[in-house]
Figure 1 (cartoon, rainbow, N blue to C red):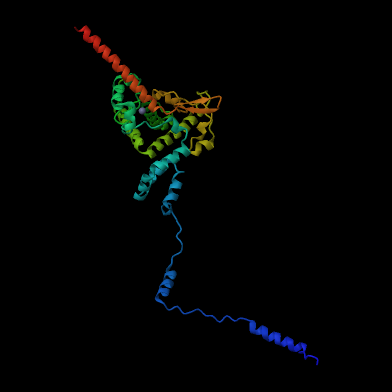
Figure 2 (figure 1 turned 60 degrees about the vertical axis):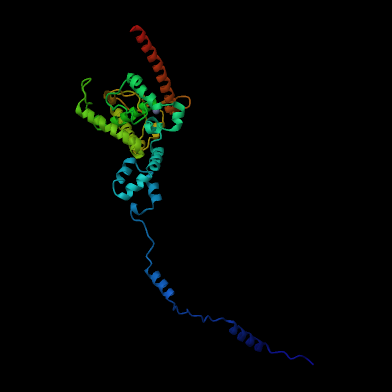
Length: 346
Ligand SMILES: [Zn+2]
């Protein structure tokens, strides 16, 4: 018996009905929030403020502030430390770090010519005593009996043996810093072509004494505050740029000048001083030498073969050995003289 089959239109109607049943209808609805916790959360969300956007320098995080300060000049940071207690504390807490970064970025060449002398307090370590014995006594004899025979610069303050080491290297460092401060002091007068003040040999006017006292105060402060040391380097860069400009305009000075571009002068860094050029290591023994002084960078010499500047090595410890040897030699001679005098007086 043949099997019965559905007609084609009946099969199509069945498929349409099945498809209509398969369509999903989303009948879910938000569940009503009834708990107190949910309501509190909703209220908090409504009250939530927009994200904080810094509008001024003081709104920045400390780390970001320090990153910005690294690129400022020392005088700007010093001025900022006077604005409020917050800035003062931030800068004081990070002063060494900020100064080191600024010096490495802006004054890598000048800082190698104008170093800080070693503080007397730094000599009072067991390592120093083990190697050099009573170094303070040796330095005292060296300063009293041997050092005064050296030429003393009249226009800068004498170094203080109670504050800094009296070895030759440290005394030179003291003198160089004082010279940088003095040269910076007279820049306005030199720009205007005003003559340097002169006074008779042996006469010490009151203004000169006051000036030297100010220099001494400034350099001693720089020994303890890295930012003040960086400010001395900044002032010497300014003096150097102004001196080069002056000498270029000085038609009487036909000597070769240090190469500098307007961009170098504006840069606020001493990068151009790494180039070859006439750079004086001679010490200005009087203010009269300032008239023709252009680039004063003591303790370096140009290496023509290597085409670069060579800087004097740090030789404080070497000098301490020299001091000890000098004092020993002095004491031997002194003993011999005393013995001769004793025999003659018999
Ligand atoms: Zn020293």
